[in-house]
Picture 1 (cartoon, rainbow, N blue to C red):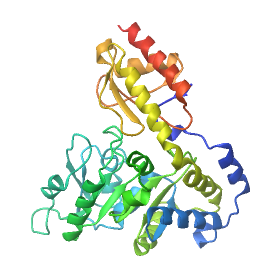
Picture 2 (cartoon, helix red, strand yellow; picture 1 turned 135 degrees about the vertical axis):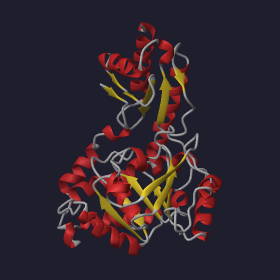
Picture 3 (cartoon, rainbow, N blue to C red; picture 1 turned 180 degrees about the horizontal axis):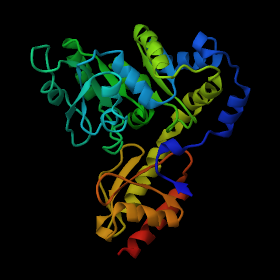
Picture 4 (cartoon, helix red, strand yellow; picture 1 turned 90 degrees about the horizontal axis):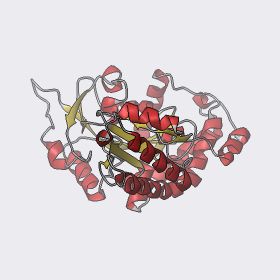
Length: 344
């Protein structure tokens, strides 16, 4: 099967498997796993932050990232399609006690002017703003990337008001690759950042939360409360180290493959590509074929291609990644062409 459902489906490389088998481990709850300690040190250095924390999932990383900045009853400003609002089981409300203040942005990229309109000061009626969250790249907007100037302005103006900024950087290495700058440059203005090891970086498990040491120390306690106190998890951290050292540098290939798919799919009658991809995420519409998204997806599966239907009757989403090369992308195009031609 050619699996384009997500970059979460990547399997660990042979080098990762060897590193996992040979990892030196200890009890991380005691702070004694040397491989986890090394991963956290390298992640912090790459991000240009004081400290970093390994967590099992991106949802846990974002939940902790929100909690270390906020108090119960505050609002978190985010984009209306943000992952923290729509795909994390309402952990913002359930665990952090905060309410989302959603701002609509067509491309998923917030501006300071749109954020400022929604900032609530402390007062007797409205819940006060406690945090601003940005998603980079923005998943449901099609992998869009924050321009550096836009991100700097948001953070500078937020800080003037005493508001912290957290970045859901699940795919921030894709953003850095698209911008052609070090990832530390992308995340420099934000207070905390979560990024995933298990997406484009190809590790089997894990995400990182990076920021000031005092907040990461607090986050370590919150990780335990969420059930994330891990023991000899250096086996997993070993794969994460390979992801940081070897996989981040090749993400441009995934972007090129996504651009190839966009060009080829746009030429198929009945298929409409929503926007030219900036990174490795592509949304396209198949309403013109007479098939719904789920029907189209089911017929693709019969032809050996996995692509998820998305929100919208005829909307599909695909992601390119390490386990799908250009030849596989070409076969996927032929499958889409065949299904589109079959129609209703």
